[in-house]
View 1 (cartoon, rainbow, N blue to C red):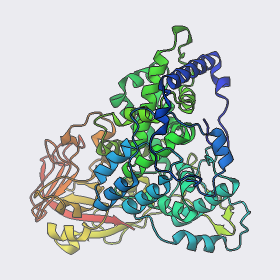
View 2 (tube, rainbow, N blue to C red):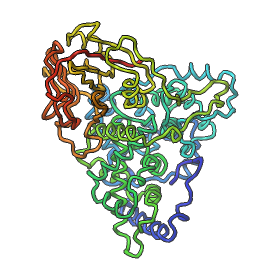
View 3 (cartoon, rainbow, N blue to C red):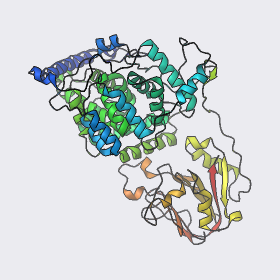
View 4 (cartoon, one colour):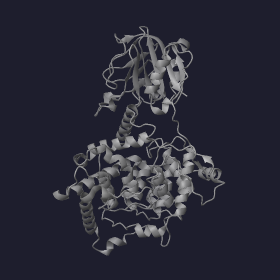
Length: 590
């Protein structure tokens, strides 16, 4: 089932896939009928389970078109394994602050999409876990739209995908309110450059809560620091398809083999993975997934897609040889149709999704960083590919945020005793895109601040990112971009422990210019020794570890050393490996 009205509606799947699509659809329809027949309760006693409900009270807001909902929604058949927890149990978990138990509880429960608990559930989850509260929406809505008529159309911001707008069962008034909510999100979050799922998620929220509550919950998810919920850049969303490809290869091997056999480019299959969930899955599945998503983040979406691929592959294996998918078939479209006609109930679907063992938030984060760095370093995305807001567009006279597109003219910091303008430009060309638009700020130079490691730490430790540059007594020049604040060296109990991310890189400027990236960008199955980025204590500062230390400075910046290391697979920066610093400088960003 495709939800609501989508601008730039699906192109006809059948016209693309011809006979193969017809046979696929026929097999899928037969599979769905068999599954429903199998799951149909034999006696009426299954339909009389106790539910928390109040007669004639709608669980939906006034912004939902109930006629559309009743016409299109299908009452799902409950399996014998379904479980409905009570609101008292839920509130007890909130009060006790047991997030792990809350996660397990929500995975087990199967409240239907029209259950009265959903408003309080989602609102409580967002308030307790993400501090979603306040009157910011009401204030900003008055400020932005005081001169607008309620019926006036509001242009949508450029960070949405105009071909995928899923209002589900919202009325015209509800869709209009989503436009206002998204406009306020755009105004209060100018850093968002591409976030197409925002429309779908806000539409879901508005089914069960008011516009101010919808804004608060969406704003909280966008600003979450602990968990990743919603991609906010083109690079982040692009990287997610490679993350999903790697997860499929590891946790759904049969599905991955099937995709490889029937596709010329397996990565392209995952281009629309987010829409398999937010556009194609039945509404009841999407609502239940959101229960868990609000606690566990994007990991729930990855689990859902893995479950989809496992079930899709299982169904495809049942097709007769004469109707199997040729290599030319559009598998992504077939998966979309499979999701629309999902042949299993929500309980079985969740059992598969949450039955995948070993899928951790840490692994997802590591893969995300790796693929974002790969995309940035290879310059896969150009400025033309990133949707931008035209300068003429405004929301009732209020200008929308604009995205920087021009080159940065660097203002070299006065007083550098190491860098030429060419060297500075070279370093800036290697930086992540979000920092390459910043200006350099000289934070420390040994010529002015002395040769004490403690002083160096004091000058840079609270900066989120920094650049350290060294010139030796033999005139070698090298250094590193440090991806995390040096204050983190104090966060572990051990005296010396590694921190940082795969954005860290090393570089040499003289006698040769060379950049050494994290090996995880081009190697699979990186060992633990290949994830040792930054470390330090009062006696030493280390960058790059694992069977050697790429850069090691002592407490007086005198007796220092450089070696090859597993994390960057670099060559030593000095011929004799041991060196004495002539000048050390550190830069921040402004």
